[in-house]
Length: 252
Image (tube, rainbow, N blue to C red):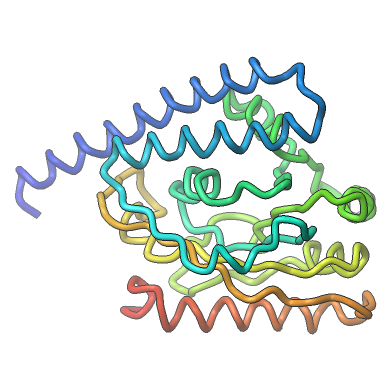
């Protein structure tokens, strides 16, 4: 790498990070402004604000956004959304793309992160994953919320994928919860992200970021004994799509 390219990448990466913190501060102010609204209206307004903030960040950082298959998501349907977890681009991309009535699951430790903790506390369900009993209670609580019409977003890998594989091994919670609530699993994928923001670094590179929405997987008439098979079905579907369509993993 030439010295000029090295300097340009460092400057560009610093710009992306600074603008990120600026826009999420603006996002926090927007969330505070709508905090008096009823819960459902407040949640939907949060995602309108998040979309605007993410759009601004992508524009200022020179990213082109492509969404494929968005029509597969029925706005009247409750879903268990699952997606891969690649790097720092996932956060603005998810906020840009998904404006369904939903909340994501996030570990409770994140609530102590300045600004981000407030945002997650507004748009997410913060859960304690420290012991099996807590995880069981979380599954039951989330399933009850889904029965009331709230969709949920979970990263079934649990954390960012820093391996050379397309996906890490999935945890079962998302699939057990979907079966308990009898709602379809709606997978989607962040594609072509890995080379744009290498997961082991804070470097950013401009380019095209993609979301691909896959076909929903029904859970009607499934039982908890079927959770492993459901998990494997979704894993195989997502892995195959990454291997055939993600330009970064085609090289692996």
